[in-house]
Length: 91
Image 1 (cartoon, rainbow, N blue to C red):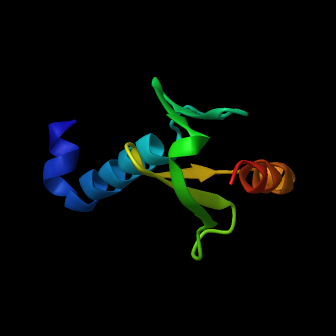
Image 2: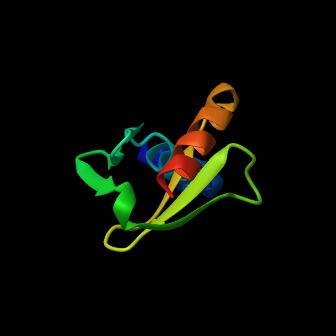
């Protein structure tokens, strides 16, 4: 395995990029009536300062919370309207 990385350095870069992308987009995110749960952290909607759809990625929503900071979530296209209605109702 080390021989592959030594001879082809771009392979290590590609594997690293895939790993970072996997951990960034495959977080366990749950949108609930009372707030959002990311892995084991809960952020209530009352702490949400603002939310917006990402300009670069169509199905990504970003929510900014007072204590938890900014959270980006990938929303399936079929659920986009429902998530947006939930966020507008809690604002």
